[in-house]
Length: 228
Image (tube, rainbow, N blue to C red; front, top):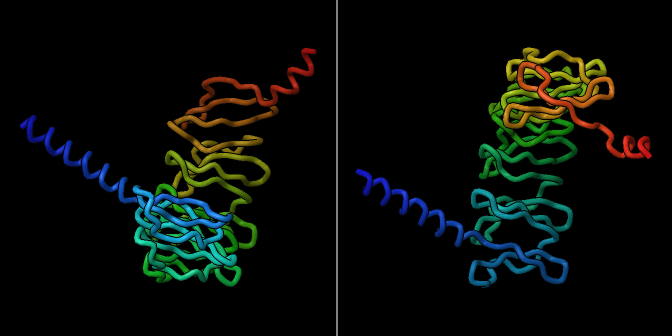
């Protein structure tokens, strides 16, 4: 049994190596971007003004201020018609047309309507969106899961969202329940169950219950000047 598991693991690792070797590499020439394979053979001539690295077999390319997408063979799979765009997350890419943001799939089909003034990539199944300067969060179906009632907010992280309302920061869960009250002058996303916040000019590291775990210096340059 152990030998079978080891063999399966080796096959899996070998497939990862092969896949990595097949991912085109971005290069620049005469201030333009193209793509080569691992041997240096050119797949896409340097014709684009800019381009991303490949993610899930797709790269975002820009030419004449328009965005589109190519596959690993260099074929355009979505034409360069978008005013702005991001890579695909959860099989959706946010794109901008005629002044509004929406979300498409890799076939170019509109999956979430173009109705947002600002839209962000999905993270942990939610995406931050803005309409009329109010921030809320949609799910993968495009449903407004958290209402457009916040002045500002970060993307979902570690199961919580740092949001700003009535001149204070706090944390909510994915059902819009307040987990940590709105009491901070600044608050940052949780990572590995910890977050940094600032309250009354002092910096703290807190856990997901709002307990203070440690203190940090919020303005070290000012402290150095005072000590001098």
